[in-house]
Length: 84
Image (tube, rainbow, N blue to C red; front, side):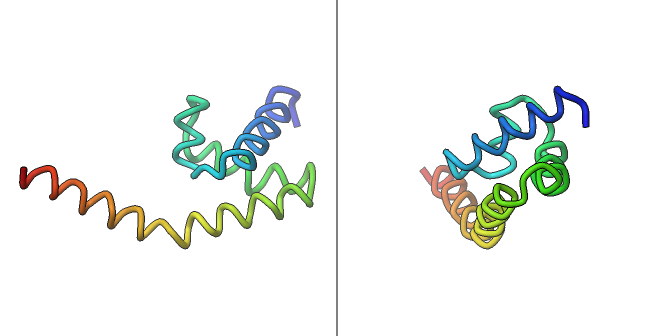
């Protein structure tokens, strides 16, 4: 793995661990695509550090389980603002 990719994977990992952010929010902060963040965290990280990969997987799984709630809340807010 190239050096810059290795550094990016580790930066993304520590950012997600500290902030418990979603893939989308992480991509926005780092200015890269969601696909890149997802690939770095789910495919490249396990090759580097299995323990960190397990921790990241827990966060990603939690985000996936909660996404329907966030989506529903966003829709509720949208229609609440339209009604004003």
